[in-house]
Length: 344
Image (cartoon, rainbow, N blue to C red):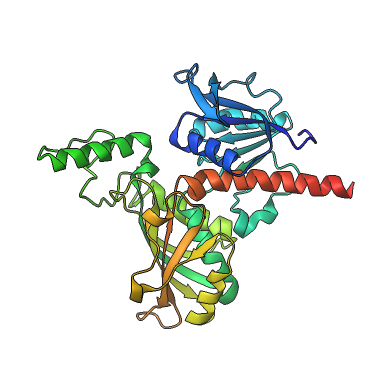
């Protein structure tokens, strides 16, 4: 990778919802981009995206297009990442992959900077970005684990349409209009009408669990460094455009004290603590949308499990749940490199 602070940066999948959010986050956080290369599939090649106030033409992703790239953010599918992330790494760059392609690869760090950023050391080549539920879960749970020793977690998620892609958001809006006009809402992107509905599925199945549930279990364990953590999870799609949420029940090695837990969360990196239910103040996906924090509240003792806790979180799944976390990983890569250069 170049020693210059100004980098040749690629965004693979630049025309999708996640890729366009990466572009926006790179601008907002003033990532030191000297040259931005928006890349996508052949179908999207030739279209344009905006970056720092000017249009850039999207190119088809290829070995040649990735030549000389210092940092590549992959916001495409796992097949694309598996094919092209090694190309970036082999040529001395760093590939930061948002897909599931490398998340369980023991040779690739799975990183949430607030939780296990120390794994970004040297020149990692490829770094994996966790699932949009595992990221906020681990940000919220890590300070409590440090205080009490996490032993078991049960979580029910409430996941927005944008987690299923831009087309599902559009379908949800069309269904809302149809219901308002007294017409029968249609669906083709998702197996059920989502508007006015709550659906405990829509993901591919792995036995009795779905793909999303398997990811949450595996990735939460890996990020927290707790391979034996007992996890029960049920994932649910809700008629919200942007913003995932979850209700969590926690058991610990040491009995949890609610006030200590609240203080730990109030000072935790990446957490916005909002917890005044008497005045109807607690996290909601509408509040979290457009922000980069994990909103946490409703922290209380678990009446059914003495020594346990219950909490609720919300997050913008396109930002901290995906793009912001990836850009933060990129910032860590640059910070580690600068530290090594200073020592040398």
